[in-house]
Amino acid sequence: MVYIFYTWNTKPFTQEKGDKYLSEIPALFREKILKLVRWEDRQNSLTGKLLLQYGLNYLYNHPTKKIESVQLSPFGKPFIPNSVGFNISHSEHCSICAFNLPENNINKSSDIGVDIERIKPIEFIDFFNLFTRAEQEIITTSVSPLHSFYDIWTRKESVLKAQGSGLTNHLNKFCVSKNSTVLDGNTWHTYPIKISHNYISHIAVKEIYPEIYIKYIPL
Image 1 (tube, rainbow, N blue to C red):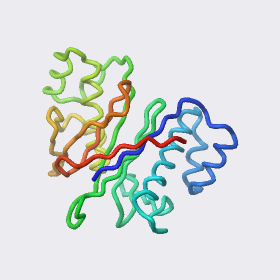
Image 2: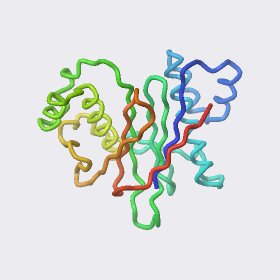
Image 3: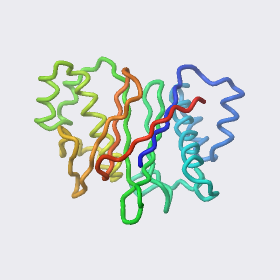
Image 4: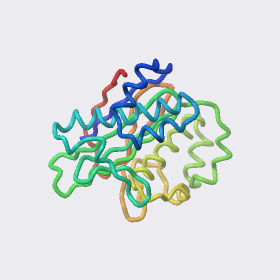
């Protein structure tokens, strides 16, 4: 089952609230967050970690399933050993954290990737070298090219994040014109996550038609 937790960052936290939330996450994360210049970036990064901790508390009531257990793979993908798969994304004023806990988790992959993007004007033609010809055709022939661009972009990003192999220059090496794609021998299925009509988001998992639970978390 896939669990989606999200929140909005439409205005800065008060100093008191920001300090309180920062004190609730490990020092390593705090240091990285405080280096960010824009308040939006700091708060998105902070709330992403808070959603991660919330999700771990929601799914597990065990001290080893905490944000302090997060490690990084050789390619920089965060993970928690022997635990649920998770991934974080944010854009503009929204932070989202996705968890994958397959039913009967024996021999089933919990890998997951999530990407969210706010829909805003962009010269998407500048990004066409990152798409396959089939994807380019979908965008250019769409009644809403901008929407189609973000739809495909978030699918591709979610797959790369699920794969977790650091292949950021391989966007044009796989096609997401359908709901399933293959990357380096792994089959990924992408599914839309409905958060807001101003945002487009997708997850990528190996499971076919997982049950998806979405919850807004006020912070």
